[in-house]
Image 1 (tube, rainbow, N blue to C red):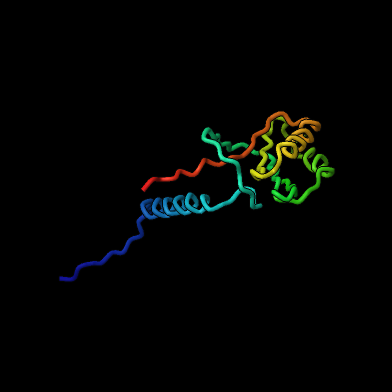
Image 2: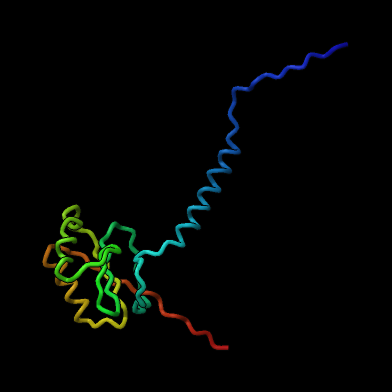
Length: 138
């Protein structure tokens, strides 16, 4: 007696392997996104216990200890800051301007930068901080 072997192609699609791949990609991108540094310029931020996280689109101004200014990682001067900030704020006047200022920068320098941004129509500001280091007693 001879049995017939049938190798038919099944029209159903198996979603289990696809869902595994999607889950692995999701985990990869979640882990990879935690390694992204925002400002791209080294500054020692002041510490604050009550911090706030924002996910909105924003303009980032970095003030280094040496007094150098950066607008979204691009070096600028106080004179050119307003010219480069105007196109960003024209898109959305409610956009948050985040200031990453080194903790050794004088308050006067930070206020001057805020004043420049206010002069061209910025309405929302945020000064970036980091949580204080907790010293454990042993």
